Image (tube, rainbow, N blue to C red; front, side, top):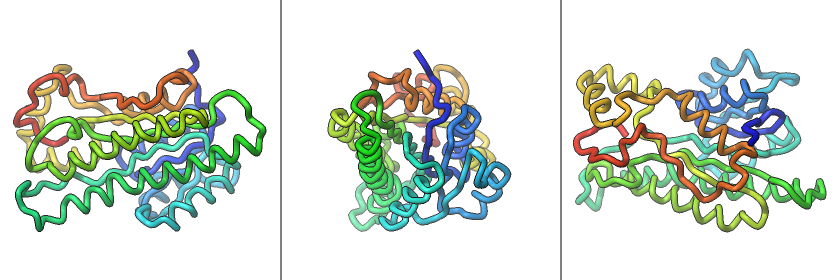
Length: 270
């Protein structure tokens, strides 16, 4: 079983910080060519500038990924840089919004769907068309054509009323993953997801600083007794992107230290 992604070309969204940045860097370290995509151009330049360039393994693309034209430009920029797209990782995720679940005027559900579902879904659809076209261009009659990975959340499977909008958007993304997997299987494009719980990203570190009691609550509610590192999520993404996962599609792998199989009542910070 080969877990190699060396020589493949990938797009990773949300790549200016946190989990997206960890995945993009991990892919570069494993020999892939990576387009780091995010809305924060200054942060992208800071994080990627030293490895970006015409002969380097990375490029970066800044733009609002909620806009269809921006998505099209991202795909074109990746093909211009690397000639093809083999892997797409949709890791852009907005921070969870809490809300009153019985307030019909609360805009949270629209915001969460607009930020956590639609860019990933539309970019997946558009990238899949590019992958199919390049396989036809190369007269590729067998073998893998592409891999798409959506970073989701454990909250999609659990019911915490203040996280209604965040949970619904995550569940919608998981269902999009399954539906696209079935749609694209005949084209030899695999689509999978990674559902995460608490990962020690910069945003979680800031939350823990403001709420120091959360650390104990999270660790107590997690059977493995700790918070995941971004690298642990990146390694799962590598597996799903590699030929080692060649018969895995339509799955949402849970990376949560066992939290999803316990009773996570009062455990914060999904």
